[in-house]
Length: 377
Image 1 (cartoon, rainbow, N blue to C red):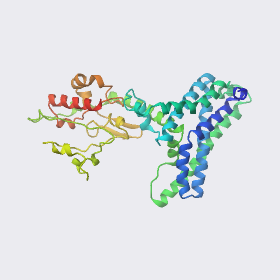
Image 2 (cartoon, rainbow, N blue to C red):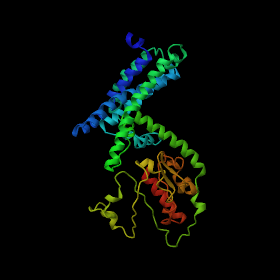
Image 3 (tube, helix red, strand yellow):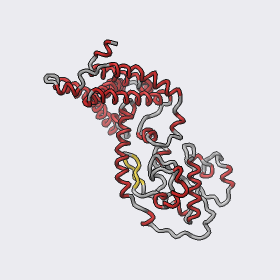
Image 4 (spheres, rainbow, N blue to C red):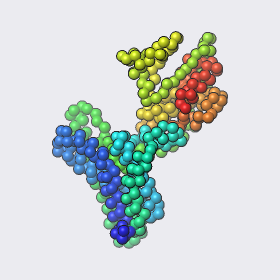
């Protein structure tokens, strides 16, 4: 215990980097290195060494930079990094989940109906067992010689700044070298491959969830500013409803297993929808998701065609969705299960103006919205 209390903050950061970078990523190492071993080459072996080194030094670089905020804030931030990384490692180890933007956006929501299904006592036990040792080190250590204190002490500034810069270069340099080599391979093979640096950042802790969290934060800021300038399709487009559609219903079936290409009614080889095919006057349409997860798709897939933009920070809208336009319907029918329009926390899908052609009348639109709310509860 005396050794733990008296070690410097720099040494503590290195031990934490070893723990998070190697131990929490051990399942990812096994999967990736097993693929390298299938057809082993010099460059694959070098990639394995680079990944082992990078996972440690990127964590060390981060922890040292965070010590610029002082001891107390560093302890809190380091604790959060350990806890979040331990939770992510559980899903990466046992469920082979890739922690990316979609996972972070699905977690950062007030709707926990789906999230609570993957949280149990196994996760709690893993979280306690894995995070206990590093947390003991963090809160037992005196955190002497933080980077902030060293910058204020004459004679220690240059040396410790160079150590942090060197750690960053150890991560960036080899990865950049392998990226350049990959670009040469792409030019000769004419096969596009994902960025090597991006793959590494998205595969290992803690860079995967940190980069995804940053992307999510940027998307939220970008979306909040864009919401003020959304086009109202109800003012720009006009539709005159034909007669005889009062008994028309619109039903959206949403879920990971309801892919249109697995539905017999839409041409799938197996008859997976025998009851639906018996319905008279039934018209089925193919639905396409606009994002990688159901929750993310709800904010952009029920807008008029051309109203959702495909951008790196997520799917943003350029036009309002229908309940934002028809406030009387959304307020009267869906208030109990409604969050703000266009949010990932929305628990019910919106109906696009193009879809309203199937239900143009006021009564039909209300019935359609009622069914949508019922499906999402």
